[in-house]
Image (cartoon, rainbow over all chains, first blue to last red; front, side, top):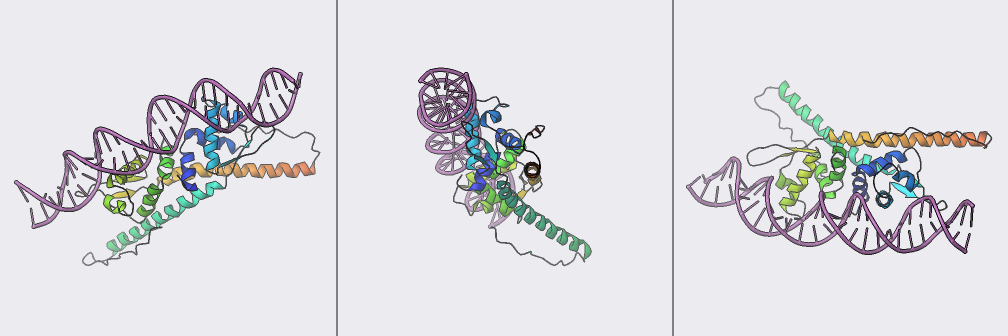
Length: 123
Length: 123
DNA sequence: AGCGTTGTCAACCTTACGGTTGACAACGGA
DNA sequence: TCCGTTGTCAACCGTAAGGTTGACAACGCT
């Protein structure tokens, strides 16, 4: 679980943590505040926050004895970039496939061009 | 780990599985084929594929004794939707904050509106 | 029919995860 | 100064994750 992308995905794999992130989009919250809706101990929530923090999704400052939690939405970009990169690749592949199928319908089925689309080097 | 969104995030939290997904954007692969680059047993790869399959990211058909693995890229939308939804919320909040700050400079700082925004249900 | 290839299933091991309780630090307010 | 509030740290527990090895099913080939 070394790299950040893994930590971000792992952090968001938990429904409680996703819900916390969702609520933090409305503004900063204290830990008690965040914990209120869930039927778990405050300590458990504290642990969840640690996970979110280590993923870079959240930062915690100090304000007297309170510890306001703040969402760092830029980290979303990390995921979006990864997802969009491979979604795009998959779609390009579909287009290529469509093209091949189209040319197969167009032309004489006897001897087809074997398009052999260039294999892109993975990552 | 009941809901699909959790399963998808969890599936992509593993670097090996992310790499498999990345390679599958170039086209279907057999299990042995997929396993080749990694320094783990074939059985481990088989398990990874099971995780990806249960997350809906991948399907497996049959072709003689081979079991070609196919990427189901539509599942990406699940994540993108979730991410974009809350990213947008966070950005809207920034805009509102900017507006408040602007009005605070403009107006008398005595008493401001307390917005108390409606809590969105995270699903 | 027998063999090699391809892949899964089952059992097991170790480590990480999510939860608990108990102790305690840090701070504001009476 | 003492107390309540807020939150973290540490120890522990049960379960799931990711890895291994061994057995074996399913199929093509000769």
